Length: 377
Image (tube, rainbow, N blue to C red; front, top):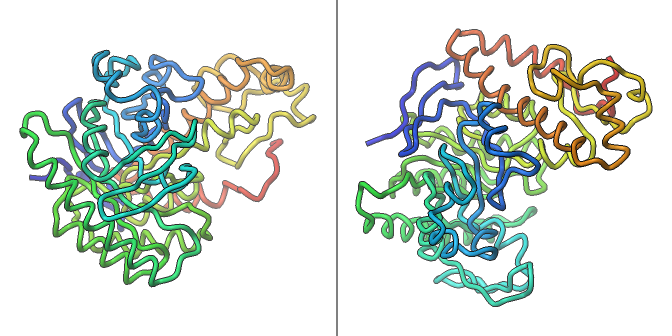
């Protein structure tokens, strides 16, 4: 039985609700990234005030430090980080392949040296599921292999077949979990930039049967056109009555374009990562608040924004904080950026329900400019 209810569509864009054991998630939704059991520079109360419905944490990082057994002994991840809303945990597959110092991939899983101290570590499908169970995640991701970019068709096909076999093992493991204790489990489509492999991946995962489906292996260095093609090649073969999740994406226009292609869920580190460099998002592009033109600018980061940073502080003050390397500066920009991303998904949902999404999409994408080095308007 699907946990996802479709409420409105316009073209391929969808508004729906995903039911989890810790409450509903209205989609489209942006999920702030809390890799280390914290969304950088933000408290749980601040995230709730921004209307964050669900956050993402990472299996690999929490397994390496402080360890899922310790977190379990302390009451689980929700209690550990004082977050009472849903949590999605990545399987750790992407981090194993991008961060591990030395790794050996076998049918059983991956043996590697972790990125912190080189300790020999193993994660396979069942191990990943066990870690996520011990963390107490509400949405768990199947363990997958993320191929590099570029990648030959032959290598991508071999990797995909392994990911599908691992996905079956993940699903079989969860079948042994009592239904009352079972979180939602999502499969991850792979296939690099090859449409035939993306189709094969989607069809294979649907045959296994999951609560939701993710598009993985994107935003790994490929051009944007290839990223969109990966989504367009997978989505038609995913069931309409299940949630779809584009992993690790993206810029604000990319989110809107992915929503237009039928994707429901997103996560991305850009809002907090760029905030730490003094960069704020606005509807007209990014703003580099370290730049000199903001030194005497008394306006908020974005006119009309209701986030705490914009309600109370000027661009000039925030620039001063960033230049002086005061922690409050990066906190205020992080608040604003997360408010912007979370609010953008809510706004897209409102327009889908109202039937005005295509007009909203056209206006937003045309006004936003990633080519601008700044926005002084």
